[in-house]
Length: 562
Image 1 (cartoon, rainbow, N blue to C red):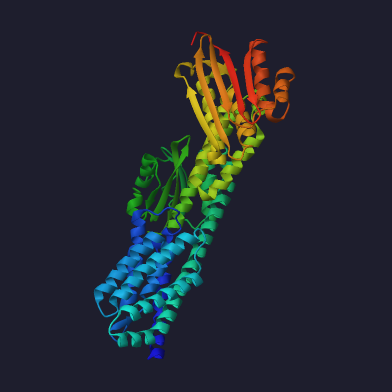
Image 2: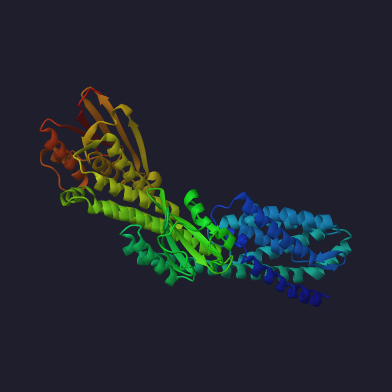
């Protein structure tokens, strides 16, 4: 009987393999890629694994009033792949279901199934982020089966029937469940690798397209640039057509449907209008959802991605297919990522256009103010976030463009304190993304003084000096505090940090001779500029102690008492 039982159980492992293969192609499987899973998504996983585990019970082989089964396979896989919540819930459902079926082994087997879900969830928790191996899963399920056999021997009656049952099913069930878990996890593991490779290829394709499109988008969003970009996307994808629009008309349509989707004509499709209005990606899986007014249009499905510039929708990118429901989740992610990259390129194009309108003398002044190390560090931070947190990377890139946009925009010798603080805020956003909790910022700004005129590029070099040389050399980081308040005929602005401090010898050189490099460059530049503007009586005070921090105070003359 043992040999026949083993053969039957092993034959039914093929069912597990089929189910594992099907699972690896479902949305539920893709949920496990997410770092944060919603309660609804966890519920989907619980339903799937519970059904799998209960099926393992019903596919069991009746023997002496009990069931030789592979129920524990589903429960263990649920915990190992889905985590503690999914494992515990699946174990409870499957275990209580087994108890409800009755039989002299019902309670021991049901309790063991519940404990199996808990144990597998704990293993998932302990091994994260490293993926549990199939050997771990097989070992765990064998331990659960053996524990179940022990409970049957201890609590099931009559004892003779319990001993006979255990003798017959221990080895076959251990082998069947171990192989079941191993087969399931190997198939899922291979599918996960395949998904990762596809995602990497899509990312590579998006970056390749973006790189090819960059020279065209440098001129902004126009009919000429749109035609070149749409043609590039069409040749590098399997799409039937690619179109780019602005907010009112089609700028370019390359591919199927170009006989009536013509550049320069007003927008034809409802999907495009919806994307422009909502500012969200619109997916049309049927011709009716596309909403083209022209009868017999061959385009059957499409994804429409809004394009942004300075947080305003300026157009759309549309990728069409000739089959209905032709787009997978990866295709949608690819289109959305491409739209985000193009939006960033449009931001940079705007920045470049404004830079070209700036006089050479202004650009030279800008180069003297911008620390190239800050630019390189900011770009490195953004590059590191592109894969792990693309939305944050996009936001930081926009913030970086805003930082340089403001720098290029300033053609006046004086700007308001509010404008200067906007530049400081952009700088701090980028540095906080780089250094996280190591950099803390406090601001106490009196609204009454925010419109007072101060020399341009006065505060940002001082804040950069405090961050770079004061705080970030400390392992634990520290706090920068910026205050501004009226004090009679002056606006008193203070920038203090609790960092390393400046040696007294360097402070002396800043005031007496200037300082060309190191911790004093920001202070020295500001000191020289204030001296040129306000004369020898300009007021800039530095109080610093090594290991205790630095306080820099500026007193800017105000036209009226504040």
